[in-house]
Image 1: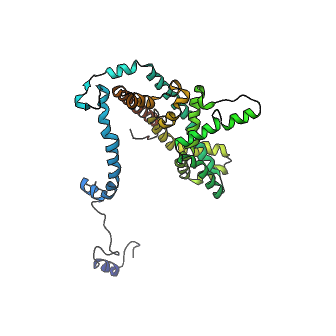
Image 2: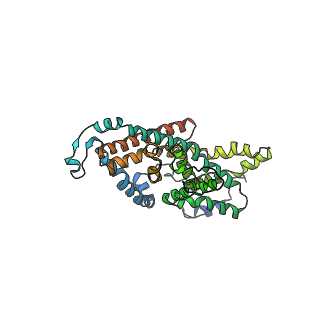
Image 3: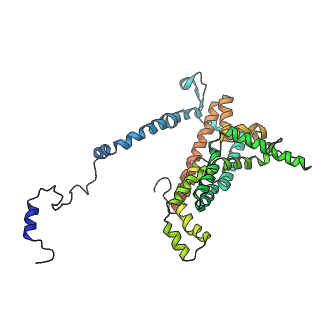
Length: 336
């Protein structure tokens, strides 16, 4: 008897079994390779689609529908007259915006603070995630993480008050200097160091919380890569440079793109709380410029024009950063 030839008794028993029997020979499903129809996919994915409905409604109500208010940038808008009663002025609001020296100062301050935060703040969560991952004792690791995460849950009012008590004119630092016969310094009211102050506050408040995503990225790296590298004699620095950093690169690039999209929003509440201490020359950014021109002074057209310009620049930054990510072989926020 051949090897692949079944005994006649076995063949007869298989022929007598129903097609759905677990012992019966299975035939390939003819519809397995066919694409599913739209109605089939809609029926199968309906639970997931229903879960996204609240998020879509929130986006429509608070993001996309308010975009219709951008027409105010082309109007001499008066809230009591509404859209129909206000006068269309075309590009006059943008002309007045570009002729305002305070606007250019706000734009310059915004870009400077953004550059400082990208240079000093963005690498800190990556380094903290690497340090957390290297802690061997679980209890110590959890304690350190809890301490680092805690400032994220404090409001900016508390953060600014704490910095005022430490670095202000009557703060702890000046009292220590005074006891040693040295002159005091008031960092909280110094326009020259205000941008570094904002960056340090942002690092202290949110850098620990930002490590969560990077820790997840490190956890997804195959541990056998580290073992193989260690057996080949690679030290800690080489393992970080050739394994950890490439494994985190997609997340780093994705978060960098998202950060650039929000680059011109550098902390409205944080700056507003400290603006009077250093003056508008050092603390005026695009968000505060929009607030004081629109809400405070009632110049809604110019304020909306500044906000619309901010959105256009942010969109350009996202598209440029995403194209730059494609050059490195990463998908970014969308594929080519």
